[in-house]
Length: 287
Image 1: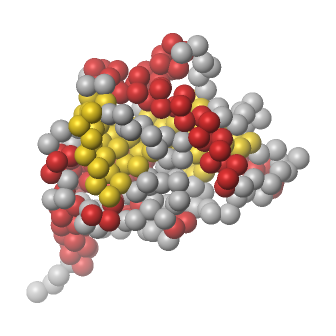
Image 2 (image 1 turned 180 degrees about the vertical axis):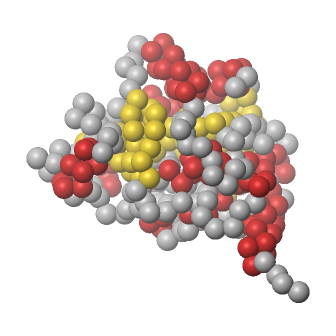
C-alpha cells in the first residue's frame, strides 16, 4: 500500500490544532471573531478588559514559546467594550529559530476558533524620510524578503486556497475604519509599505538604501508570515507599525533594543486607544 507522506504531515498538523483547541475551552466559550497580535508597544491592551481568561503559551499543546523579553507569552480571551476578543500577547519570529509553520501555528488555531478579523501590531524601523520615532504607520502592503513562506509544503484545502491572492493583504475597509478613528483623535493618519526581514541583525546603510529604493516605508522582523497565513484562511487583516527608530543611510546611527522598547512604550498609549476604539467598529461593521 502506498502512503502519501504529505497526508501524514497534514494529519499531524490538524491533530496539533485540535489538541491546542482542547486547552482553550474557556476562551472559545466567549466566541470571539476578532483577534489582536500585540507586538512591542501594545502589551497592555486588555489589562482592564472584562471576563479575562489568560492561558500561558506553555499550557497550550504545540504552541511555540516566545523568547522575546518584552512579550508576555500568553493567550488572552476578553470582552473589550462589549466585544469578545482573542489577544496574543507576544508572537514568534523566524530569528528565534522557528519555522514559518511554527510562527503561524496560532493563525491556524485562530482560524479554527472562528476568527474573521485580525489586528496585528509590530515595532518597526522607519525607512521613509517623513517618519519620526513614535509615529504609527498603518500597513497598506508588504514586501516579504525573509526568504520564507508558511504555505510551502503539504496543503489541506480546509486551510484555504493553495495559491491565495495577496492583492489586498491588508483589508481596505479596515484601513478606512482606522483612518476614521485616528482622524477623530485629531492625529495624522499614515499608510505605508512594510518590508519583512528574517533578522535579528539590524540593517546596514546599504540595505536601507535598497529597501527605500524598492518602495518600503518601514522594516521589521515579523508580521508577513502571519499575514500570509491569515489571508489564506480568509481572515481580514489590519496591520500597524510603531516606528521606534528612523534609518538615515547617509548619517547612520547606532540603535539599541532599549531605545526601541522605550519609544514603543511611549507610543503604546495612543496605539492602545486607537485599537480600543476600532474593536467595536469592526464588530459592528459586518465585514
